[in-house]
Length: 252
Length: 252
Image 1: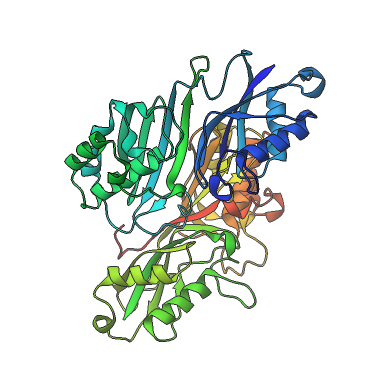
Image 2: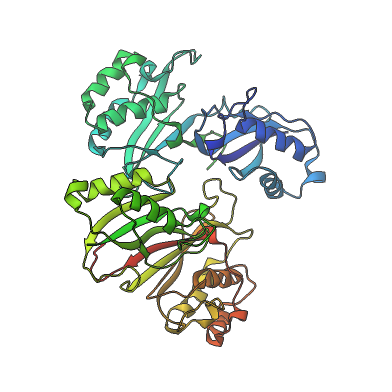
């Protein structure tokens, strides 16, 4: 049977989601512990990739399992409980459930949301969980600029060269900054799909606006140019969270 | 002149606030960096103690400084900026300001508030910042029990033996549990003063109620008994935050 896992991880200690030789990834740790739990080698397929140091507050993956559920677990909750006990503290499983045989964690996702957290004063509890910016930011200007990002079209400006995508078209449905308390703010962006490094390039550009080094109108031109050289530098990984993934067959 | 510092710290790496031989404390680190910054040996006096591993989202301390402010700093903000640059990431200074010569961080505090955070599902981002409880909790019962804690009187039941306090009288003005999202909650308690280990003993007892092992009414009897042997075990340090300290001469 095919199962979906809904999980969260603090990405600080990992070289991203995707398994790779010679460095530790979330996928590798999850596959190893799940294989131990199920008693057979198990591959998990993620809903996408996250880069080194990027977090996920909600990440989906699927795996196939031929074993007899009832002989091994009383219920799904017990399976989650056992897996969580085997995983390190920085990876937590919310739930595991059966889906249709053809449901796919990556190809069936219809919408994804990322959150980027920023703080502008030293904050002991945000260390590694939010990006520190050494200057006050003009949130109103950043939101004025963000409105030029909400459209269905070409986002090549914010695509890392060599990203390997076939197309740079995305349907961005929301892009908005909000306060999260004094000297703290978050940026939420929702789209059908994201290009490699896209959110960090978008945030890096919007922070230039927030610092007063670029006008909101300049962002409109930069987007239209479809030229990665014109976007701002990528914002740091530690502020970025994959925060929501939508599937037509899963209610949240 | 006498100055107040308003700071925050993640207590995970420290053996509490108070300086002591052979183990690192927040007070020691702050005194060392402040002495470097001011160019003279500087003693800081805290608003109270926090135990090993306990956090503070707002902590006050005072120090005296004979130096000429204007020759060393452009303004208070620059002083805060420089000190924050010298302190480790887990200690952050919010502000420094001059007070009257006789104002005292410990003796002049009129009210203190602590927050205790609990979560009942594995959560990668709450690791070390909230206490994990391995059972769902009945928040309504915990709040029913909390009402027996709001009075002005003897809290000897929740005082660690050998705490060294002259009196076990406290004026508890608020004690309340609130949801902070799915499977997350916080307990806020406000009083004129707190006894050693008091909040962790109170929370340990209320968690027994939340688990269904003790009735809310039993808490009323336990409080009245003034016997530490009858309170629950101390809740873990990692969930506890000193969250507010009030002075009549400081507006927050």
